[in-house]
Image 1 (cartoon, rainbow, N blue to C red):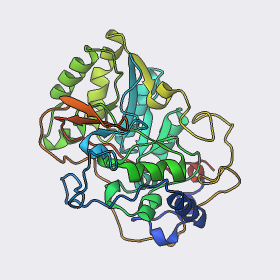
Image 2: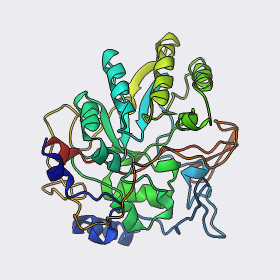
Image 3: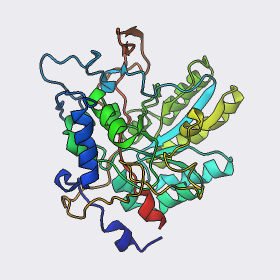
Length: 356
């Protein structure tokens, strides 16, 4: 690996400046907008610990917007695993707890899909490499863990990355809509991943839940129906969140579930230009044009200091973690009601430069 100062130099320590993006990225976005592939949906607004709100007259669960925050299911997004599959993934890494998680996964000869935050990779490069070198799938959780629907098109693009090109991204706080998911797909080729159960493990350190409560939930879900399969939102942010997973791990096999990383569960591989994290078949490619480019973020970026991005924050106080009813629109999009607001997330990863 390059020395830290060398590989980290092109990457901002704050929020990337969207006026300094690689021109190819901007051109790809502009072409998608001109082709009508990016819906003209207004940005939402929000205050901390609240759901983003759209302007008056905009229906967040209508087929034009289909906000994942409000549990509208776009059929192109991943919410459920295949029947009988526990599709494992962890958000917000790398953190010091990543080491404990990787030791456990390696000792059990399994792997997970890590939705990592770009700024955290800058802060903990060796923990990123521990996950990558062990064969863990690296996916995108954005650069700064922001609410994506509150951002402009260019600022959404600025939250993306390069290297081995991840196939999957998860929007922070589950905050995606048809505009955001279209940018992810049209500009970067990435599929949006949400989840169908949430332990709220991110709140264990603040008293929002307990390890005992998490274990009760995991026991309930793992002893329940196997259709659909499970995509549970979990975090590698503390010894407590990782410990809750470790405590529940034996229940997966005991209840007849097949444990796979989320990327394994869908069979297409974690990357668009390589088979997996340990393969030597990487095709050198631009994330926007599929060949020949090695775009790096300009070093002329916002220098506003930021701390390591915190774990997910609650947005409502509803107690139910699962949907109580659903309906389908004429476009095939399903909308779920009676939910507790949960939290996934979008674009990050500094793969290539860390591995040079």
